[in-house]
Each structure stands twice: as structure tokens, then as C-alpha cells.
Length: 295
Image (tube, rainbow, N blue to C red; front, side, top):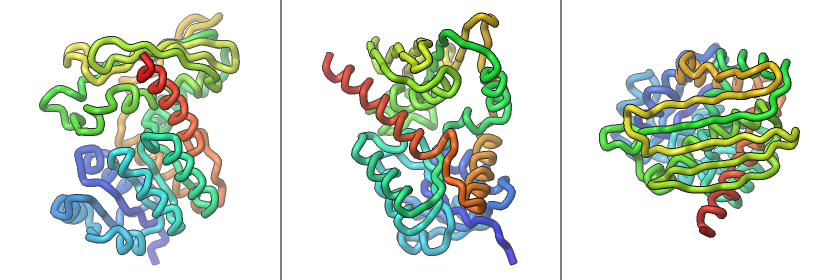
């Protein structure tokens, strides 16, 4: 008898195919059993590529899985994830978990009331080289940091050039990664000051509970030649940089799926990248957005 945790995948786009499906397929204790998407033809194609079955109706899909991995826009993800949670399915969510605070709160409430495991796929927080770097950072005192994500997702031929990213920009797409990393290394964020540049360029100044401060520049509109991510911490020991060149998104997703399996089997629910942490990040994004809107 196969005792693997049966994963269903919601989504059929580039990230679903290249990262989520491959990550689940490689995760110990997990199997990709079902696919559901808003495009049934694409769901059929993706499912057949991984020996899974596609479903036309979401409720039928839920009836054949133990856990759901989401790779759809945040405003699509949130209500579907509530339905999955209420059906008792463990969740592997994308970031941000929603596009507004009430939707995020409703999702967290559904997770907690149904006693399920729910993780958010912050890529760096499940990347083994970055996890090692986090552990190293825990052994030193850091006074500040700087993280810049100059993405080029909005160029015409980029597979991440999707409608929700064109509307919400770098703050909401790559901002969660940056906020999560800075919060993980410098401590809880208690204040944010926001400014904007051209296109979707957003600048953040973050104040941490520890007394540290950090800064960030975010965009999806950078030229291809400027594309990249850097994160630096500074303190008495000098400077240290997140090993971004060692990050493999499929390996990270495999680790995330494996972690969800372990939480589901053990009954443990807390994790540094759980849905409550996802809600904390959502609240900071919403605060920053309100400052932008008030300008």
C-alpha cells in the first residue's frame, strides 16, 4: 500500500509546471495525484506528464487528495484554499497568501479551525543553502540589512508577465520574499515607511523589534541586464550576503513538500514559514500599499 501524502496541484502555468509539479514528484513521502486548473486542457496535459489525473470540478479534485499545492494568483488562491482547508486538506500556499487582509484572516481562521498544516512557499526559506546561511546569521549580531530585488518579470517575453503582476507589481510579488528574509534574520518588523519611483519601483525602510533597520528596493520592471537579487546584513562581524546563486527553486519546493508531509504526519503545525507568518507579511504589504495609495 502506498502511504504517500497525496498532493493535488491547483494551477497549470509556468511556475506550476516547472516548479510545483517537479518539486512534489521529487519529495519523499509525497505523490502528485491530481491536477485542477481553470484551463481544463492545460490541466489534462500537466496531469498526464506526471502520471496524475485531472479533474474538472474543484470539489471532485479535493475528494482525491490529502494536501493541495497552489500555483495561481493570490486572489484566486485565497478562496480556494479556504475551501480546501474546510475539507481538511493540508496546504502548500504561494505568497502572498491573499491580496487583502480580510481574505488572509479568513484563510488563517480556516486553517486553525480545521487543525491542518499550512505552509507558504517562500522559496528562500526552503532552500538548503539559504537555510544554512540563516543558521549562520543566528550566531551573530546584525545591526541592519539591505535587500534589493530588481526583477524583469514584466518584459514582454517573460513567463511571469501575468495580469496580477502587471497590476500589483514588485511590492506584492517579490516583496514577500524580501520581507520574509529580513524578518527571519533581523527580527520581527514593527514599522514600515514606503516610497515609490517610476513604474512599479517601491522603496521600503523597515524597523525591527530588535532595534535593527533595513532597506529594500523592489520592482518587476528592471531591464534584463539589471535583473537580480541581493541581500546583505551588516554588524560587528562585518557583512554577509545571502547565497542567491545557490538557490534552486525545484529543490526548495521539494523541501517544502517534504516539510508539509512531516507536519501532516507528526501533528505539528507551527513553522517559520507557516500561514500565520504569511499573514504577517500580508499585513506589512497592505500597510505599505496604503502609504502608496495615500500619496
